[in-house]
Amino acid sequence: MSPREDAEAMMREALAAAGAAPDGDVPIGAVVLGPDGTELARAVNRREADHDPTAHAEILALRAAAAVHGDGWRLSGCTLVVTVEPCAMCAGAIALARISSVVFGAFEPKTGAVGSQWDLLRDPRQQHRPEVLGGVLAQEAADLLEDFFAARREGGDSG
Image (cartoon, rainbow, N blue to C red; front, side, top):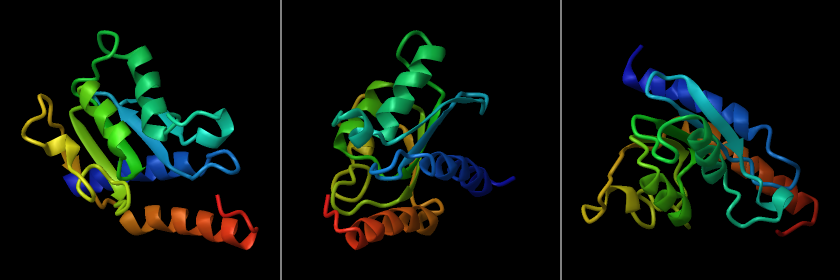
């Protein structure tokens, strides 16, 4: 399997996770894989369900992975796969967790912090800079978001 095929296979897992998002939450999925490719954790966006502004899929997946891997919080050698480009908060957490690589699906032109608005993870001033591969199955990831927001508009919820 090529690296791109590997990335697509990993993204399919994140897309599957996104499908389990609670009603009312934006369907974003994240999966953390260990250095050997074993899944350590998966999570979905739960901001609305948990009434928690930090309950992004990436943050929840990092927390769960850190509980089962590494030296308590470092996720060196691990890969984070997420359906949408991480925001600034999530990019900061990714760097602090020492994730080795990030794979994401859809670019987020309004709040993306891994290439769209900012590029926090590859900023040369950062102590830790993971490898980043963006745009993997981007249309499939974008379709999830478009369908979600279209349904909200049809339902009269502008949230």
